[in-house]
Length: 371
Image (cartoon, rainbow, N blue to C red; front, side, top):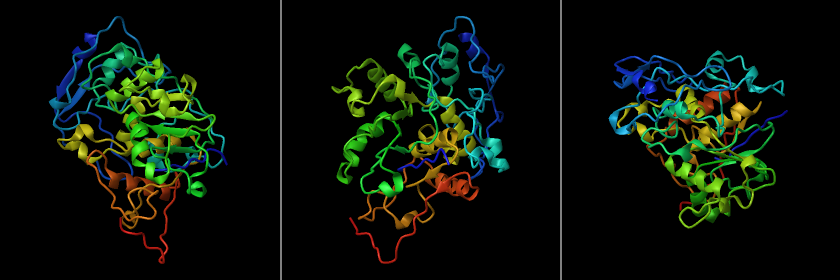
């Protein structure tokens, strides 16, 4: 069986936009909570740039549209092109009879786009794409960002074969080889997670980001600091007195580094994890977790997926991080993530046989120590 993955935790454009109330095409999440469209900030767009072809249509000389501010919206703004995405053709062929793409689950089939564009290519984002993506807040686009040319040069389009192990964030391996394997082939991260993990997980034996031979690095463009990180990484330039390349232990090169496409990130949110918190005043910080994006990367790259270290219904029994096995720490709920919604989604996907969710059963004779 192949593909088993496990995880450790121009102005012309602008003129065509009109604000209208109670219109749009918000897509409801299919497996968890019900998305209620009660926002007053919805929009329509007269022309559609996206098509089911490899490339986005280009138009004559365009200019950056005026910066769209997050502060202009009290809730998530919904555009009538919100659920339209770049697609690659054809979809990746299946290599396993048990492929999740053979699922007969109608809800999953309706939501799942096997050929959604997962990764940015340096030629993907022209000025027209910049203008389109400027309507979406980070990490889903460039809202609130002033146009800078270097933001258009990101990374290479990723094409990898299934069958890899994948870990993300801290990726503590020592002592957990039986569950997560001893080799990392794909590492999903942000500029924050790859730097902060050195301090957060040091006490658990974490010394550096994975750097196994043949590894592929996948980055989530979380915000402006990530694009600056990419600029320094590609150009070999220092940021805050340190070169980003040092965090990859000599394994970085342009052929093994990939950036998730903003359309892919938005697709994951819109179709699977559209939290009701997006209707609140702090909507702009609400997004799926890095782990959620990692799982959906696997679901689109592999035939079968197994997830280890993710929140389950009995999460209160266990520490905040799986590596804290000698402690009983409380799970911390941050406002920018809807952990309960994600927990319900993983269980639903498990029950629907879309993925395998490892759900640990704590032994009665083992009582974690209080910190």
